[in-house]
Length: 324
Image (cartoon, rainbow, N blue to C red; front, side):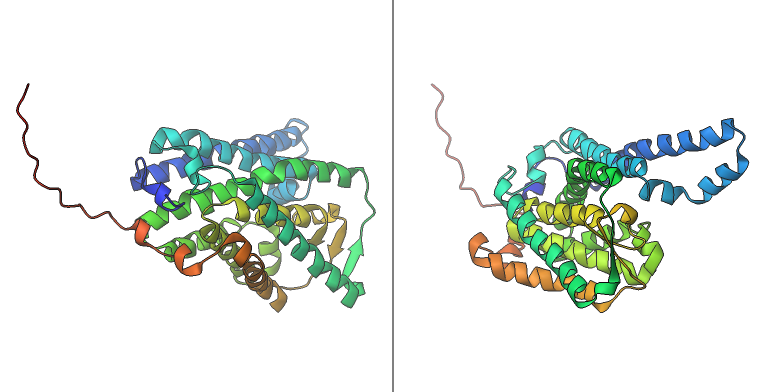
């Protein structure tokens, strides 16, 4: 049974999908709510009205530009992932590993190759920019804050990216595949949803919704494309993990999440054509590099026959046997 066909097991009423997403969403709000209330209560109790009003107007900054805020954001995803993993079997009556791959197991080699190949692309491109435009970046001296962020990011980023892969490339893509009977439309729908999930990211606020969101949608298409090719989410998870880890601690654009702590900060004024080309180019190159090694077959990968209802087979009339 393939990854998409796994969704045919158990119970699959659309209300179950809504219920599980809502349960995860509400539970994952707990860390940020508690954190922000605690900070604001400190100013209220100290009667510091100016500090209270300033923090109230910059709640996003408190989460995305401080190390405690970074931890809170990561815990948000960890809780959402844990809630999805915990309640999935209860609601859908099928094994949790069916969300991971068609083989119903976690294939470490796929995660490893996804991490390795994308690390090369994600590091080489910025290095090329540094060589061709040496005035476009600033190197920050590593300090205790940097090493603390690095340690936290290595531990927590797998859960943040794992949450998004489990929900979008696993749970929802399987669900929409079953609903539309089309892997292509499942890919499109979940990629748009993935892009919209990032609407409140610093980069979107900095560069504009209509310029930044299409890039996130394209990244979603890239990750979903490889999930379909690999018959599971491990390869995409590896790509997603190393991309975010590098963006958090190694190369970051001005205005990006935790950019002031990153080792190298690039000076950016606007979204460029390169930002749109990068997901397309890397997808094409990775496909060409791994096509033979992974045995990727586009026609077979996007075949929808396994999503269509099984026609009732004609059974021959039974012959009665005398009771003993």
